[in-house]
Image (cartoon, rainbow, N blue to C red):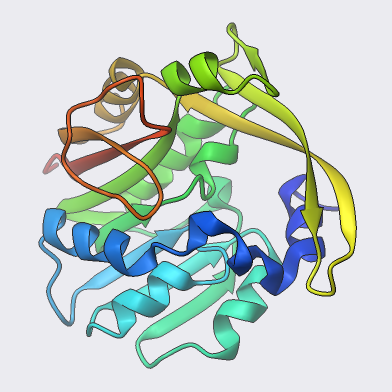
Length: 237
């Protein structure tokens, strides 16, 4: 029995996931993440919800040691297949992380893990696990869907205002082009909600900016961008 509905989607898409336009901005995204997290070669980074490993591969190519986790065994297999030196991967449910102050930084991008935790309290469990994985003063970069953007622009999706979850019925394709109808549920947030959630789990929010795939930056939050990028650090215990 699968641990999460996303596993079936990942199995179907396989490497075709990397054909989607939102995966094409990896270098720019990593440029920004390296800058805002002040990452240095040799530092250890945990990539939560790493997918096929595109951010982890790019970071490892810059001398950063990266360990990626994802609930999809298929995505982990793809990430391992051509992993550069310094990038390792394992299948792990983000709700069950057991790391203890092992990393200088944690990243969770492109709705990886955190954005798919739509049952009550699951997002908090993931945040708590990421906090525990950080060393004192360790840094976090987390992206999240914007509630504002979804309500304003996602005409084909249904937004549950009580749960803060967007649901859409969409079509996904396999590596061989086979089409399949699929349901997607995504957690959505406001900057205030993100600050409250992270601060409740021992993280000091440095900044929240409006971003979109391939265009990460430091612009103030608006209702016109699909995602927020949160940068935070662990409060020393």
